[in-house]
Each structure stands twice: as structure tokens, then as C-alpha cells.
Image (cartoon, rainbow, N blue to C red; front, side, top):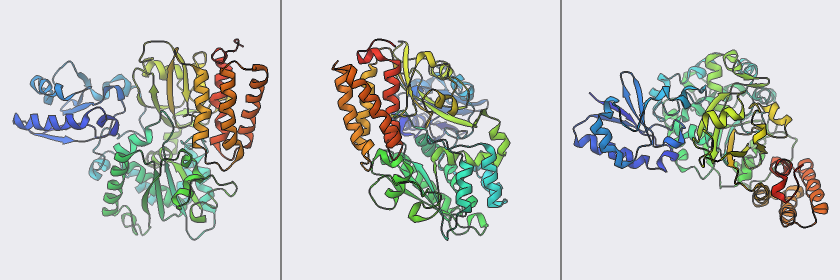
Length: 513
């Protein structure tokens, strides 16, 4: 009997030896006469357990990890192909508490299926949403997305249905769907996990978006630092096209939609939607002034839906299960789930898909297990390098867009970077300004010049020079950047700076407020 063995081909697993482990398992099994089918799946998102090897048994998939090449002979000796006990055994994968306590909607298939198998994708509920969408009018598809409460998962949290309705109603002989997969924020990796583990989910979401607004072409803009995702994505697009899912006649419906992937050059600013459009069009990635909005005049001057990857990947389940099903998760105006990503000084880093409403404390301690160093958590930066630093006394804060905004913070793409009590928050604030100075597109003065001057002012404050003059100057500069910058690059750089000043004044040589 052939046993299915799953070893991730996700880049995070490859970085810690998953490729070598897969080769060792195949070689050792062959030498022992054991028949196996080696499946290179995506990562389950339990980063501290990679490489996580799974074996299909009659009782379900059994997990072992983290597995090294040196562990393979002992695993085979112990009978791991039958799910036998071993010091690395973790039991049934679905019963691992870190996974069992999640609500995996968008990531339901990631780590479960063969990423490039259309049959596997379909067997696990894939294309059910697309088939429903093909039976609806464009207006009905948009209504379902609107009623679900889905908001942009890239940071701005703008209601997806309103954006789609605007594009649907816009006049134009050509319209586009653009996926922003330029995942450049520190501590974020959900886009990569999904692309490497379930690329057909994104393709299905983009197909539904195209049907909804009358677009016949879609573009996926991927950051250059993701070579494995790039390879998997292009292979998935080719297979979808060969299967009749993309092209002039989607599943025999008479409707056309095709997808092209574009690779960015590594500029952080191209995560901003209009700079991304400029880059796709072959120009330097610089922010466009708005209005006009991309929904009216976007890619090549045509009405364009531009959404973050996780937004589009959340659409299939909404169409498949209904708007109410998705809307029933979450709290307030934050509906559905968000894939939170735990990184930095954290014991159990990884991806946690949960409905909005759990607290930071639950995420950092119940899932993350506290710090890897064993020291107390002092702060967590939420929402990437432009996100505010949240102090330990605010860890009761529910993970909700409005709750975070009320505290001067943002959820952003759901990335969290954890710091223990040895961190120097003054240096972290300086880094935020320095990052902006390095990554600014240079188009507007508040961002281009403000960030450079900001680094200089922070340096004077950290050196203890004339706090009476430099502190008000820094606060005034931050206000100018927030109010005067063309985009969120300059407009949000002050968030980490001001939050560090507010919550950790001693790190700037100031008395506690």
C-alpha cells in the first residue's frame, strides 16, 4: 500500500531544510522497499515546527516536527509511515492546539492540498464560488461581497463591495482587476504562504472579481523577493488556462478573463496602489495624486479594481457559502477573518487565521507563547514598519479596525512584530524615519524631506540635545507629514515615532509622562 507523505515546499520550510528532508525520506523509503507518494504541500503556518512532515493514516494526517535529515532513519525505524509514536510526533495535525483554535476560511486548504493540483483544489471545495458567480449577474456578485462586510485586507480596510460597485458602474470599454501581492511589510508573510500553498484560491477570487465588474484581464503584481511564489503562481496560471478556467471562454460560459503575473523590482513604495499601477505600466513606481481614483481611472487609464491578495482570496468562500456565513465571523464593522502573522521575538511564530475580536494578549500569549527569549513582552508593532508600537498595558485591545484606530494604531496587513523588554524604543522610532527616507518615492516634500529631517531631529533628542526645542519640532514635523503627504508612506511614518514617544519616553531620555 502506498502511503502519502507531505513535506512542505514553502520557502520558509525550504529555508530550514525541507528540501533535503524530502529527498532523505524518498531515498530511505525506497531503500527499505516502502511505497510512498511524496506530496510537496504548502506550509501549515506553524513556523517554529518547520520542516513539518505529515503522514496520511486511516485516522487522519499525523504530524512530526521539526524534522531534520538526521531524524529520518529513526522516524522510519519507529514506523512513522503508519503514524507511530516518536519524540517528534505531534499527533493528528488538525488536533494541534495552534491549528485547532483557528478559524481557517481563506487558508482552509493551505498546507492541506497539493498547491498545483486542480483535482485536489476542486476536491476541497475549490471553484464552488466561481460556479455560483457564473450563475449570477454582476450586480448580484457585487451585492454578495458588499453584504459580507469584506474590507480591504491590505491596510486601508476600505469596503471591497463599494470599490467593486464603483468599477461596475464606471463607463469604459475595458476594465481591469489588479492584485496587490507586493507584500513588503516587516512581519508579514500571509500573501507568500497562500501563493505557495493555494494559488488557485487567488485565481478563483480574481475570476469572480472580473465577472463582477466586467473585466477581461487581471494582473498580479508580486514582489521580486518571492522566487518560489513566482514559480508556483505562474505554473498555476498555466494549468488554469489549460483547463479552460482562464481565457476567452471561462468554463464554457462565453465570458473571457485571463491573468498575467508581473514581478516588481523591490521598491517598498510599489505596495501603494497607484505606484503599483505606474510600475505595471512600465514607469518608475511613484504615487499618483488622487482623484481620480483607480476605480475610475486606474491601469492604462481604465476603471480598475485593485485589491490586496488576501482580499481577493477571501472572495471564493463568500460566494460559495453565502454573504451571511462570512459576515457572522468578527465584530463591529470588522467582519470575517484575518490571517494574523506572528514574527519577531516570539516563541511560536506563524500564521493564525482568526475572526476579528480576539485580543492582542490572546494572540501573543495563547498562540505565540510569549517571547522566544523568555523575557516579558514590552511592545508589539502591528501593521508593518509604519504601524504604531502597542505597549503591554494595551494588550487587552481587541483586534478590530475601529478599536485600533481609536488608539492611534492600525491593523494593516495583520503582521505583528514582537519585542521583549531589552528593546530600545528610541532606536526603533529612528528606524521608522530612516526606513521612510530610504523607501520614499520622492514625489512629495513632506515625505521626502520630512523623513530625512526627522532622522536628524530624533538623533538630537537621543543625544540629549535641547529637548525643549527638538521635541516640539519633531511633533510638528510628524503632524506635517500626516496631513501633507500624498500617500500612507509619509502619512503613517509618524505612527511608530509618536507611539514610541508616548509610551516609552524614558528611551528618549525623557521622564515618564
